[in-house]
Length: 248
Image (tube, rainbow, N blue to C red; front, side):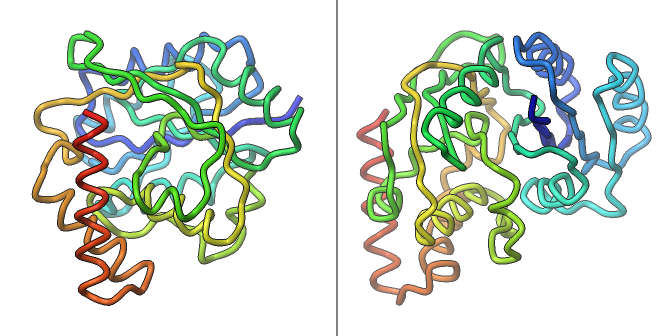
C-alpha cells in the first residue's frame, strides 16, 4: 500500500477538529499519516492538539514558530510529510469513509498524479447547504474561469510538489486556487470523480466567507501569480465572480 500524508493546518477550530479527525480515522484505506500544523500557537491550541494527538499514533503535530497562514502552514506540512500521496483536510471539514480508497483506485487505474471529487457544502451544524459536482476533466483555460476544485477533495502525488514553484502562496484566501492553476498551466492532468466524498464546512466567521477578501485575493491571483495586466485581471475577476454566482 502507498502511504498518504494528510495535511491539516489548525487555527481556532476547537469546535470541529475532533469530528474531522474521526472522519479520517474511519477511512476504509488505512495507510496514512495525519500532519496537523499548529498555526494558532497558543496555550489553548497546544493543549487541544496534545489531546488530539492521543487519539491515534497516526497523528503528528508540527508547531509553527509564528503565524504563517493556511497556505504556508500546508507547505510546512508537505515538507515534513512521508507519503507518496498528499491530501488536504482543514480542521472543520469531513471525509466520507471511502474517500481515500476510491480516489487511489481511480488514480491508479488511469495513472494519474492529481484527482478531485464532488463535495457537499455544510454549515456549523452539518446541515447540507449545497453540492459542488466535479467535472470529469479540468484544464487551465477552464480552471481560470471558475474555481471548481475543492481543497478537501484533492489527492495528488507528492512528486509533483518537489518543484519549488508549486507551493501554496501567501494569500489569505484562494491560496489553493493559485496552486491548482499553476499545476494546470504546467500540464498536470486533473481528473474528477463525480462522487460526494467530502464535506466542506462554511462558517459565518471563516475567511473564505468574506466577500471583500475573496475579491481582493481573486484579483491578486490573476495580477500577481498569473502575471496578467490590470485590465485583463479585472475582467478575469468579473468572469470568476459571475461563474461563482451562477453556481450558487
